[in-house]
Length: 242
Image (cartoon, rainbow, N blue to C red; front, side):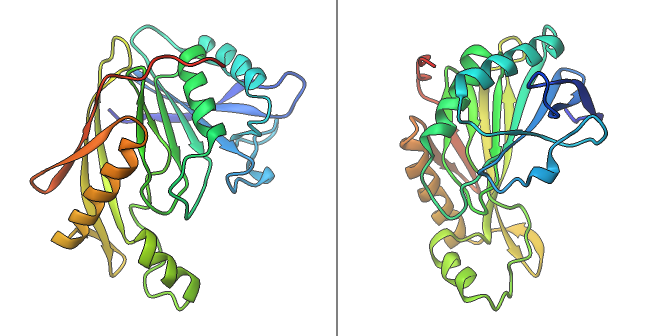
């Protein structure tokens, strides 16, 4: 399934504001792009009545923002649609999942009719959660970046801990009737000479162990099947309260 187009919405997320949702449309899918102000998303990226852009969310008053998000999703979601909420929300160089991210992601699933939380921004892999059967990613690393060969000593130290040169490609299957994730396969990759390549054994082993540890903290787990990783989907966590 691929997105055929990306078009701006014409309804403000916040009444009387200058922010708009952007929806991508394809057969069986709706994509909503949002940015979080403390996730390195500049105010200049925000959409206005005269400019296409993203919807910046502060994630301060979560109840209010979820209510407004719910109204927007209801306007575009059709039977059989898979609603994907995409967030560029940080944090970089940190394995932990901020409480506000998890709270907002779960609330978007519980109340706003969102099926998949596609959280990204970190330059390294992070843990994955399956909540009430729905997929939540908090950081997916970089399929490709320009860090290789950098003389920046800070980046060199980060590589020793976070291995931003080792990443994953993600392939998910969903139940189109309810949006639940059925399967998530991850293919280990590495960046060499600014090209995406299959990893060697050491990198694949590190990615497996790190992802398994991070995902277990979120109620899931990861097993290695040959050259690929597989998300272990246990009993989904129950709905929380907003």
